[in-house]
Length: 255
Ligand SMILES: O=C(O)CCC(=O)C(=O)O
Image 1 (spheres, rainbow, N blue to C red):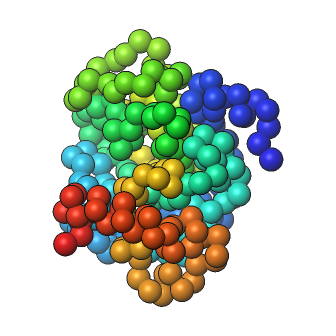
Image 2 (image 1 turned 30 degrees about the vertical axis):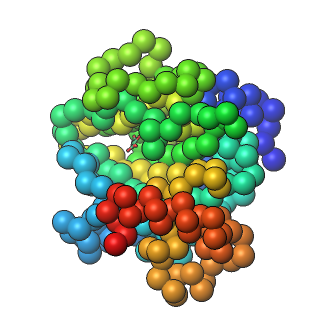
């Protein structure tokens, strides 16, 4: 159960840090799996979503290991997500992002999916899974607490410091639930080691998925899902087929 203080932090600050959330064995498996995928996918890694200079990416992870379907459906995470965007929600995407050693520049300030809260309220919520310690040096995520209430976007391309920004550091195994309307971005990695994270991103059911899961998942992946995971991935949701296939076509990911 979410505690009252946790609900309040999500409502007021826009984010909640869950230290030590990932059990050590799961953390080791996640690290091994993402490294194996980077090795296997080479220059194609991230192609189902996007490439980013200064960072390695992976996309469509639910299709790339049973551990990932388990991760996106963990009860505490879902409780947090549903607190922010309501119970009628689905997975939008599951990606990995690893900032390269000494990669130079911070990411521009942004909100995920360019999303501004609408008349029904918030509709995007992300979770950042630290696979390495996030430190002041290695590219931790910066955020502006309370900016999810502003209902406006940061200036495109701005990477400079902004008033009120905070750097969210933590040990590997920490998960940060983030109202994704809040202004945020990864910072520059000034160390000689990569900084790895997973982003499990959710959206309200009346909005398209960032990655149209049903079109991306292989039949054997779909067959192994629990009923709850099927619902979370919107496998049987006809309205999602309409919304997300149109979006995938527009982005060029679906012919
Ligand atoms: O990995 C991070 O620190 C944040 C990345 C992020 O916000 C994004 O890629 O949209």
